[in-house]
Length: 427
Image: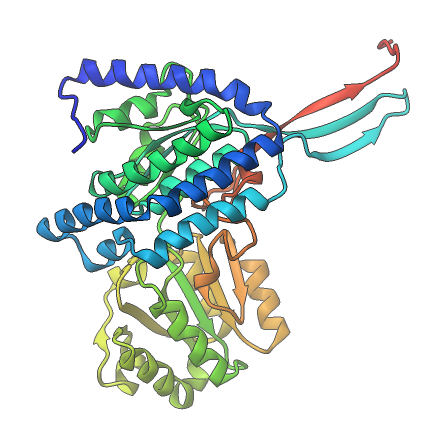
């Protein structure tokens, strides 16, 4: 069982030390070779596989605690690890290891008339703080992504996943040591006291360069309100699917069930279904029957209830609710313009999908909706860094500054300019 520091002063001192050690580790990490980082990552993946039994045992403690405290089924699903999910964690680390190293990558270069050659080059951000809830796999994904991008990272997992995160973190440390990299490059805060989060939000005396929150709306809201360092916001996933009059019905049926029911507790799960009113009498029933048969509760507007007796009346609150459960709100809309209006009003700007064959509808959807991820004829469950070819992601950034969408290795870098001359002076 992890220890707990009761006194606020003790937590502040603990966190200050963590920040100093992270800053010290960031410098050698920023110049580590791609080969050294790859060696560490492969060793981490091997350690996760080697210690799978211990990780499962630790997760069993967290699951038992979660069930005892009445944790919601969707959150228990996020927390749960099994053999397949542990294998997925190690595979994700190996995939990150195989990615192109972004550090030192020349983003752009050009020559000036005076002979100066200018390069814009990727550099690590420095020290990243990641605050997350429930998902123990974030410990591995965040640690591996930050290492690959040359950043030191301070991880603050949720109290509900404390044993699982600590077991996974131990495997990451084995990987760092195997490659001769500082173990302080990936630190897991060893206490569950919420004061530790407060110290991170203050910036750890200037030793924290950016914070990435990954969790519920209340966590993200607190981080955005109190942080004194830049934040990559991962807000709730209030995702929409719009079925246009031109949609292929069989395609729509497959996509909608997958978008909602594949995993209801992930941020890419569809929460609202919008359907063109013109096709509702013919198309709505099979779509909702599929969802109902899959165990999904339907909450609809009056038009939906008139056509599907099992639907419950939707309230105003339903249109702005991220259920993270087998529940979906359904609304009939008057074409693409009405659908766009609804999405722009209620969306969290995470992920939206349009099912349509009319290219003009698709172009309006892509041009007039400003969410981080937009999909055409595909499930919202593809809102995932691994599915984007990024290996994994720390989160889906829904803000507009620096990083947006899946936050992978490239998004965890900044850039600097290298200017090469041969004696030029400015007149």
